[in-house]
Length: 447
Image (tube, rainbow, N blue to C red; front, side, top):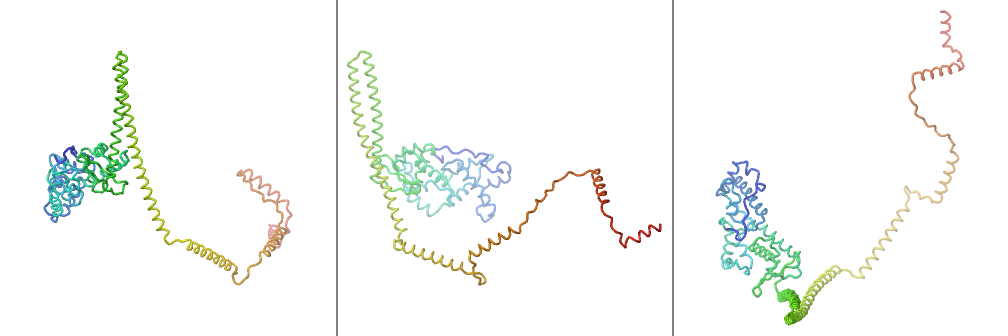
C-alpha cells in the first residue's frame, strides 16, 4: 500500500468532478489518453490536458485532507467506466517539478530527524539519495506505490498542529512529551506516520526541536507564532523533569489517598464484624498512609514552588527584554533631541508667529485705490442718521386685502350682475355730442 496505516481516499465524488466527466465521452477519451512524448507536437492539447489533471489531483488532496498519496491511489480514485487515466504519471512528474508534490523519501532526507524510528532505512541511504535527487531532480515518473506528499496540505496541517498546541494547557511550558502531543493531535492526524511528517515540517520551519532523553522523546516549541525555536538546553530538560516529577507525585498522592480511604472502610467493616485486632491493623495502615501522603505533599509543594519561581523568572526575563528593547528604541528616537534644541525651536516658532501677526496687521491697514479707511465712529454716526431719515419717510399704509377665492358663478348670477352694471351706467351724466356725432343725427332726421 502507498499509505501504510492510513485508509486511502475513495473514488472522487460526483460533485468534485467537472461536468463533462459524465456527459462528454469524446473529451474524456482524449483526457484519459496518454500524453505525447514531446509537448512540441501539439502544445495546446498538451497544456489543456495537463491543466485539467493538475487541478483535479490538487483538489482531491485538499478535499480529502490526506497528506500522502501515490500513483496507484490516484488511478483508482479517477477510474471512469473501468478505465484509468494513462497520463497520470506524467502529471505527477510535472507536479513534482513545480514543487506542488514531493517524494516522501526526499522530504525526510532533507530534514535532520534521526529520532524517527520507522525512517531508519531512509536515513542510512540519505547521502546517496539526497545527492542523486539534487543532481537528477524530479524528471523521473514516480512508481505506482511510491509515496508522494502534498506540500501545501502538509504545511497547512503543520500550522494547525502548532495552533492546537498554543491553545492547549501544554503550552504553559515549551517542552512537552511526544506521547502527550500525539494524544492532543489524535483528531488531526489519523495515523502516526502523518503525525511524524507534520513534526518534520515544523522542525524544517525551525518551530520545534525534538530530543530523545532516556528513551523518551520530548518536543520543544518556539514561543510565539513567528519565533524560531532555540536548541534544547539543560534548563529545558531540567524543567521538563520537574514537571514529570510533579505529575508523578500528584498521581502518587491520589493513589495513596484512595488507599487510606480503603483502610478506613476496612476498619469499619472489621469493627462491625467484631474483629478488633484487624480493625486496629487497618487503622495503623491508614495512619502510615496518611503520613506518607503528608510527606509527598511537602515534596510536591517544593517542586511546585520551584516551577513557580522558574515561570516567574521566565516572565521577568521576558519583561526585562521588552524593557531593554524599549530603552534602545527610545534612545534611537531621541538621538538628536536635546533640551537646548527644543527651547531654541520654540523660540523660533514664537518669533515667526509674531512676524506673521505684524505682516497681517500691515497688510490690513492698506486701503484700496489709495483711499484711507474711514473712522469707525464716523461710520456709526452716518448709520444712525440714515436710520432716523428712513423712520420719518415711512407712511402707514393699510394692509393689503387678501383675495378670498370664490366659487365659480352661475349663468343667472352673471346676467344679474350684468343688469346691475347696466343700471349703474344709466345714472352717469350724458356726454355732450361732439362734432363727430352730428352727421349721425342728421342722418337720423333724414330718415
